[in-house]
Structures are given as C-alpha cells and as structure tokens.
Image 1 (cartoon, one colour):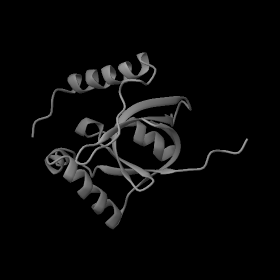
Image 2: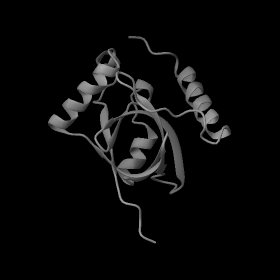
Image 3: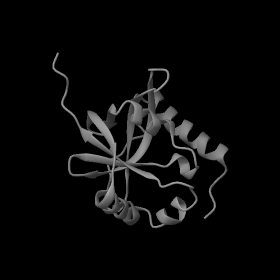
Image 4: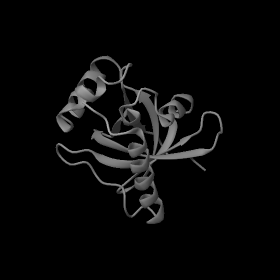
Length: 150
C-alpha cells in the first residue's frame, strides 16, 4: 500500500475542516451507513495549551458509543487529538443530529478485536494500511456522558 504524500493528506484535512467551519456545520458531517463510516467533529482540550481543538473523524456506532481510530492518516506519530484525549478524556462531539458529551477510552482485548473487525468490514484495506505504522492503531471508544448539572 502506498499512501498519498503527507502534504496532500494535510490539505485534504484542512479543506474538510474549513468547509465544516465556513458552512456553520451544514457540510462535512454524515451518519454512518451499512459498510460505510460516518463523520463527526470532535472537540478536545489541548494537553499543553488547555485550549479547545477540533478535528473531523470517521466513526461508526456501537450501541450508544461512537468508535473511531487514532490513525493520523496512517502516519507513525499518534494524532494530536488522541494525545489530547489521553490527557483529558472528556470531550464533545458533533454528529449530524446534534452535540454529545463523551468520555474517551481505548478499546482493549476482545472488545478491540471485535471493533477492529467491524472497521475491516467498512475498509477492506484496513490491515494493509495499519501495517504501515510501527505501532498498533488505537481503536477509540467515545462513550456518552451525562450533561453537567448547572
């Protein structure tokens, strides 16, 4: 498997995020379909800056949970959003039908195997792309958390 040049991946991410921002969220998100992932906007808290950071990610639903992968365009470094979630696991996601508060964690063991298999059904080249990384790609579970009581 050959990845597109890194500059291309970064430009594509910026364009997608820019469309989302310019349209006020009307363009850029979609619900998952059978055999196809959806897209969400995840807002994390920066691990060093403490500022909000946004990213658009692919996901599928597993019951009430949203499942994504910390893949950074299949490049070796962990994506910043995943490093942020490891430091501050409470976050916010925007899905096509609204906003949700979530708590992030990495899937482990049998749960990770099951969720990886679901991703494999969505993306038949998943294992080939994952082999390009020197470390295991984290399967990230975004679990719902209650709205804070004000």
